[in-house]
Length: 280
Image 1: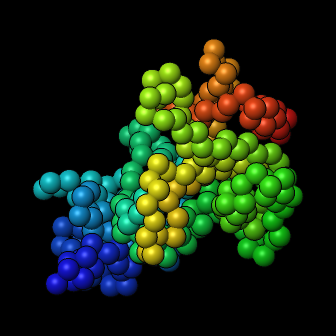
Image 2: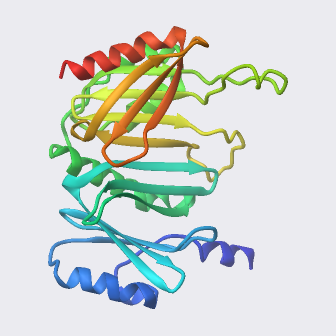
């Protein structure tokens, strides 16, 4: 019984509209009636969040979300997407799209069971390619700038390398190891999870490990992967603090700021990344 209940919350790739729950059909059918090209539709039921449908079209990505008795529709043209994010903590995963809709700037999140991430990883890659206008799937990537990271954190070197798309070239990176304090010192010091920031010629990649340490056999990773096209950046700034830490702030129009913290020993790399970005 428990296995059946669990599978009810697994995402489904929709091949026939009859597979969609009734409340999602009108919105999906209205959209696809005007779109004759190829589409990818994923229904994502959730135990703890609103059920949602992710529809990937050639020029836009659409999220249908059930909110009580109504279904909310959010449509993002590819050229208006500011960031995409995929995250996972144990069996809880999500795909987030932030950008400008017809009404305003917003973010929409589709939650799903981690065991079904094979449906969402190709969507993430397609989204990134369309946002960055990358077409050559066979072009070699250039991760030479990450080589020194092997000696510091092989785990994050692998995370970074696996996150690059074919044809991307790494220009700079900044890595901050995790800092944990004992219970007695937390009031007088700063903590942070390990994170990696990578600059390519088209994109800013942010990879953060989550606070969750428990592992399961169904978990491929536990972390947050955020991808931002450089053309969507408003500002990026590094400000040193009085406690020996620096705060790096990334601003996107109409969105909440993204913030990373760096110890003094790692601020130089962060500053070099910003300088490389400014020189583009």
